[in-house]
Length: 88
Image (tube, rainbow, N blue to C red; front, side):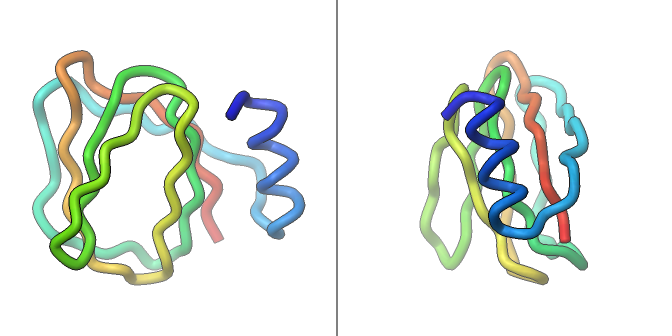
């Protein structure tokens, strides 16, 4: 998916304008939750998200969705990750 398509998707689903999120290479976050629903587009690098014991890999052009307060773990690839995140 490209940025214009993603921005249209956010609007269609009632998300506000996205924020840019960046994490460094080979880092991660242990299991945690967010007080928002997130829909995000990877624009640089890669990351892995683990939810309910299932690991999902994301790279440039991929989108991921996390439900409100959904427990998950994150790890960032060899070059880190940058993504646009709509949060509501």
